Length: 496
Image (cartoon, rainbow, N blue to C red; front, side):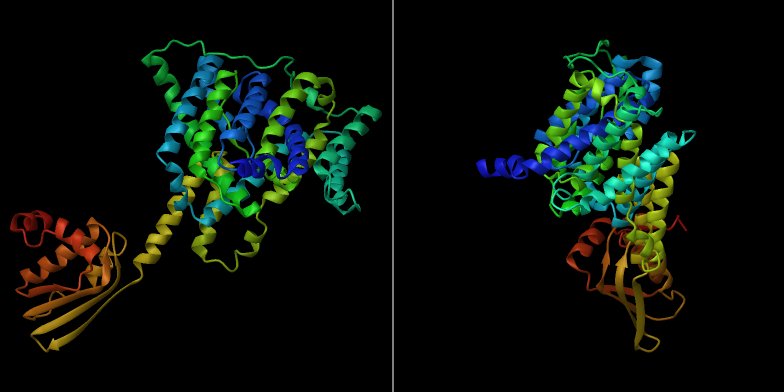
């Protein structure tokens, strides 16, 4: 127990502490921006980011991952806030937390194994593009000072690690933010700062129970939004956890992460915050800055609150160009550049799944839709590929009297037509033996295809013998096959 605590919290004190500070600085403008997207006061996003980060540090299943208010979640809140107000959003946040906890206990995170690597790659590339696109408003219609500051920030981020002694010990994004803030304050140049994004809170969050009637009507109002928030929140969190797993070469407990996200969202809702989830951008910043343990997430949450409440005057002076530089670094580091080289090597189906996921996520700004399209395409390509691995050969045992068909491969909904087409029902023979020892029947469609083959042969006056069914196939065939049931045969063949 003590060793586990030391490993999770104390094994990387310096790296986690510095990385947490960097993440907190990058969270401020994003939390404010996401609040504006959702149509609520900036305090709602800032309080949510603080609460979620602190709670998930203790309850989450993936150490080193950052969770807070996110744009994907904010986009789903717009209609509810516009039509019913903040109190209903807080109620929806609480319900979202409950649904996510239920999802954790139902082990729905295990469904992530159905998300192929090409979908994850497409998701990563789409988020990298969205992160970069989100910075464009800060780079359009501005003076040359903004471009100079952004370029200087990128130079610091990428060149500072090469400075002897201190280059590897201090996160370069933190150096970028500090240096550019000093330059901005000393020169007084006319560019946007964090303070221009919205008013920062001047007090700690307090316990708030949503002031909504506890009725079925209220439930019907918030349920659709809560369900969407639950799905998108868990999808983004699971995807981000998978990416951090790869970056750190360590495993995570994704079902615990579901529960942790739920508890964190309940905490946010009770403190006047909106629902959130894991953030790939901030998680990458954390990992790249040296954060590895739960302490980095806790430091990020606490530092965020301390800065916006007690150091608001200083934080408001951070130029947006510095944070834009950090986020551009994140988008460059997030994008899977190797996926572009792999387009020539990977199968066309894999490329289509990856590109379709990218396009749908970027166009719709909806992670759930993009992942659904990717998973659906991947499943269709897989079914088609496996369906083509089917061979049916035949030989005459006794010319004009007895023929044996040997079936090799997988018989299911995608290959059932090929299975049926392989038999010659018009050949005049007394007996047909169908050797299924190297075949496997997976579903009802496959069983129905076998029924039709047997029935068609029998209607031509041919005796049919099935041999070699493995135990699993025999179980499903014995349970659902109807070729020995006259009434069912007529129904299956359409009564003619």
